[in-house]
Image 1 (cartoon, rainbow, N blue to C red):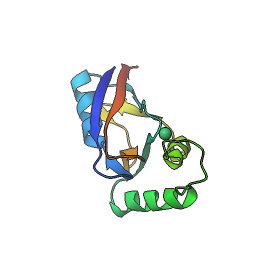
Image 2 (cartoon, rainbow, N blue to C red):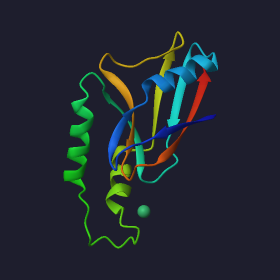
Image 3 (tube, protein in one colour):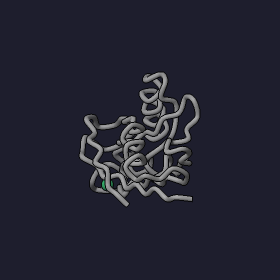
Length: 131
Ligand code: ZN
């Protein structure tokens, strides 16, 4: 397993990490297999979605803010319960097939690290298994 560092520059936003993950796969030497990506944080997440139009990632954040707005009635003293809940909704791991040394993604898909309580430097755990 290797750890990628993902620097986020905003309080809430999606970061396209497809190129970084593809680099890890190339360096692993695995041609056929599966790549697991795991976020070891409680106010961040990972997802796969459209990477062609960059406005989609902004709309995802807009939608998640509407679904789970900041709310002073939450009891958690850190004040970021909305970020914990958004993290739960999106999820903290994804798996992608590796074929011919390449991520096997759909035409419009990219891999996005989701920051819900930044900006911070985050860890992303990556394991590429040959199969
Ligand atoms: Zn918290």
